[in-house]
Length: 370
Image (cartoon, rainbow, N blue to C red; front, side):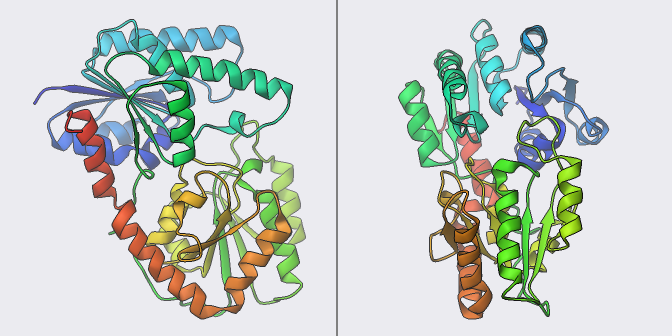
């Protein structure tokens, strides 16, 4: 096989965390694999794996109309130069710009990964509604060309996409988890430890988590709360450095930066929390399930789809720190419930989130087997 596959994604670290196993499997199968993305410091690592990396000037936040047109033209020229047989577009701008550009190019198969419809589908108000209308029309044009296939991660997003375009749309629950890297261990810490790991964005529910921790600290002095992740200056919802200083000053939650070993973080925790406002299918909850940890998350698209409600985790109301605290408390005081949910979560990960099954489903689309 000498087919070329091109992955277009916003930035290198996201590709590594969410799509790298697909690229490595493509290499194993004999594909020539190209990655087109913005570069931080991961280019040499990706190239050392045998991938061909093409730096892209693209911002995950708005840079003005001239900057967006420049990114679009660069995407068009790069795709045309590589001339792939298969393109896989991931994240909002690559999906929209790549989809529109590829309509003017001869590509055998185009795969669009809608890994969550983004903060613009959360925000309210006239401006947000107007932008949402424009984005929907752009999706309609980008996704509706021949030889196109869409992958979504939850039923709500599938319903929205199918209301916009008639393109074949497949539901694949998340990016998968390597079950050899994320293993089940019994609880082993002296005090109850609660962890949240995410990009530090307001719409991940970081402030609700902090308020819930304050409520629970008044009841349970020995319960520990941890927060892992970095701010994201390119996202309008990001916390600031001053926000982090204030959180640390309160001394309610231990704040850590990004962790490259989340499996150990979760294995050393009792409960994993993600009170996000909306998701595709949050990988962190799949990883928590694989580690056998009970979850508390919000009753919103994506989050509720990452658990089996009342079996592997509990749901709280969105943007409601009191509701979040109530659900966490149920797991603090009931060890048997935590353990049973954790074990059920591990089974869910084995049956639904195994990276091998996720890869198989993607290649079935790439190779026309479904």
